[in-house]
Image (cartoon, rainbow, N blue to C red; front, side, top):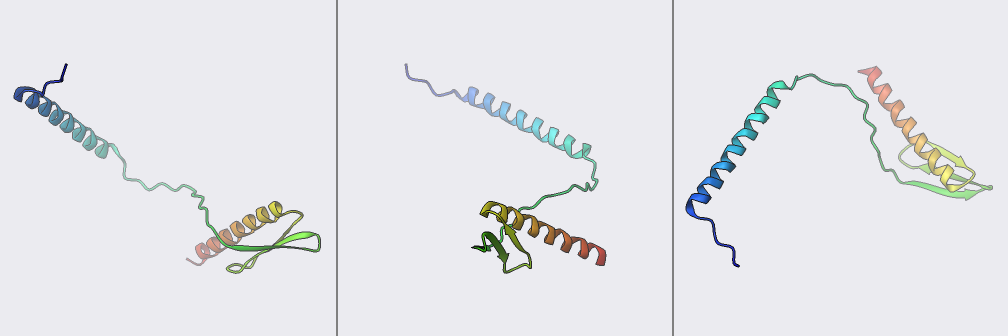
Length: 104
């Protein structure tokens, strides 16, 4: 059996329900805005950065270096050298940030 289209009055009723629901949502949103306390919150944020580094195998170990930064690392295998490089970059960036804070 084909579904019939809503009548004029059914459309008006649906429209009114939507309008009431929308008005309630706007009222709830206004209440949330009033309840929110405008305070600043300090939280630590960990940022992931991508840097291109070069790794090579020599003298029975892996060595890695980044042209943008000074760290050079060594590892018994590639994964260890890569982990050491990530730690060196993180340490370098944290040191830079601390020095900037001390100057400010």
